[in-house]
Length: 347
Ligand code: NAD
Ligand code: WQD
Image 1 (tube, rainbow, N blue to C red):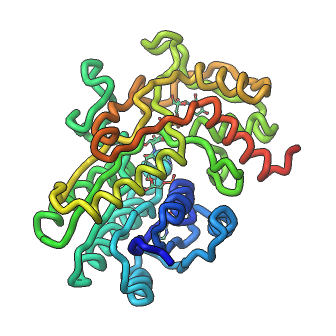
Image 2 (cartoon, rainbow, N blue to C red; image 1 turned 45 degrees about the vertical axis):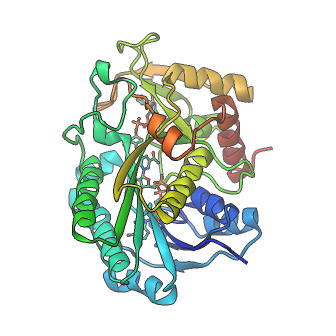
């Protein structure tokens, strides 16, 4: 018998959503997942069921359609909190298809907020935001804290994250029953230790780690490292790579706090990162050392729009959420490789 309340997870079949479903169930929460599989497959929900040995309540629905989304609240009137992952997330695609991005990402958030606050009960929302809201940080702001300025977005995707944060800020002012926690993720990587769930990008991966694992699997001929003439120790860009299971656990801490802390702020923001910056080259070398795979790579011109260096100051999440991202990156890269090998049926 579950002791904790029900948490709605939108985008539950996605990369971060599926890992968070596992952690919520392990922490004793009842859940209900929703996804329209626009960027995922039902296989991920099966993976969550296998890992947790439970039947996972799940409804296939489109969060950007109010009628469709409302079905979940009719079926599960006991929802106490929602974690909102459902969104489109490809930066380049958003530049080409801004309306599609605004429609999906903004509508989904508006309907979620409306449906949550129309229940006449307390409403708690955790929102998936991104370090992209900081843009290129000024060097004196590194590591970057939640107080650092939000810079004008460089893509419609980034703009949806900024807009959603602002919409939620206005809504907590207007609706006394609403509490919001915005979580700004740095670079999530890796897969569940079971290799039953992980990242599954469509087409050619844009993100570094899936490109590395697909190259190691022989699907791509070589990794191109975008730029080795940046103002960094080895000339390649620096990021804060955070293990997806550590990230998932932060969502449980955020939900715990919203449900059980009466005096905590109605709107709060947390950076979720390790606090350590790693260069692209360091990550590639760590992958080779950790897995024993000799990864073919070469240097290519800089990728337009790339930030040079950014890493988190996660102190606020460490102290208030009592959470930290501690899994060593070599272990995380092994998990990413195990996942790739399993889905490609490599021994
Ligand atoms: P993902 O694409 O794997 O997961 C998103 C899920 O939402 C997918 O399963 C997709 O099918 C679903 N979805 C999209 N629109 C929907 C809709 N209208 N109705 C129902 N389901 C819908 O992405 P992810 O990496 O798991 O990201 C989750 C969230 O975290 C997103 O909001 C993303 O912007 C944010 N985020 C991701 C990263 C990252 O690098 N992965 C970094 C910062 C923030
Ligand atoms: C990391 C580093 C690349 C691929 C993106 C989004 C951001 C956020 C996280 C959602 C960079 C280099 C990459 C390759 C490479 N998502 N690289 N060769 O750009 O930090 O952030 O995902 O909110 O909004 O922009 O992540 O994994 O694409 O790149 O050299 O084939 O790897 O240049 O330095 P990024 P990434």
